[in-house]
Image (cartoon, rainbow, N blue to C red; front, side, top):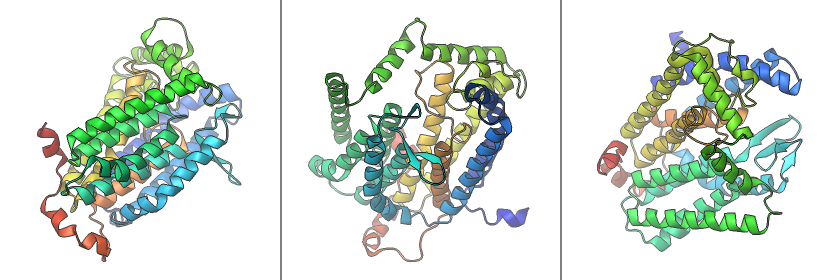
Length: 406
């Protein structure tokens, strides 16, 4: 067994927790898949289990492959991929609003192999790497707001604007993650406040345009607003129905749970294997299982910060935070929705929920973090990096110190 482990570089705790979450995920996914069979009448529970297994196996191959790449290469790769993600987002939006009843404005259908891919998830990963790259190259420079607006915020807002029409929750999470990242990267606070104002103004303008021209974005803004209204009201509606069933599942589970596969509410929750899988876990494994998951993600967060603190360059430090925070943040949001603290967002539980895109993008992020923790730097560094690598290493960003200063 030790012979295999020698090929796994980087933080062993991250490897262990990721593997543990992936293995644990088979129990709730297999249990909740019985509801999918009843809803759609296709396949059986074993077929859904093997589909989840294939997603996870490919995901861990992605982790292994990505963590073998020196993390410095991701800097240039983000610039190369930036035009590609813009094109992918535009093409995805151009497909229309629904395909076979699903929201096609979020998904890119991959021909010949019959798979669909959520382009916004990939775009967010590339965008965060791009922001980390920009911050690491300008951390000790005097910047004007006009310059940062053109070189940093205009690309950021362009990507987010193309994600917004189809997926508000992903846009909001990405925007918050970028704000945290630029704060840790010691971006001027007054510039950050200006961008928050611009972002809110852009959102208001988007909503007004959608209301004035409903044919352009049918149902999307109404869906966002109805979810918020449903969250704050006591009237009967579909979102409230799901939240009520999720809370019933959690209450039924108690401390020790009903046992694996014995969930009752999985038969009433349409998204029991994805958006509300935390409720099913709480019902079957009780508060113990729910706390196990929460502590697992918090342990990952702790290790992400440690990796960032020990990174040899500012880019590595920022990259670890940029890739790690969204994983934990998304997990907390999924849990918050299940327990009724947040309105329905459609965010999955990383490495636990079924769904290929979520698993694969989480694995890409973990692979990049492991590359940073392994200290994988190329034997030769591009000339443009040689100019500032010494200065960067004089003052490596410590995210804990940055946050403690506030």
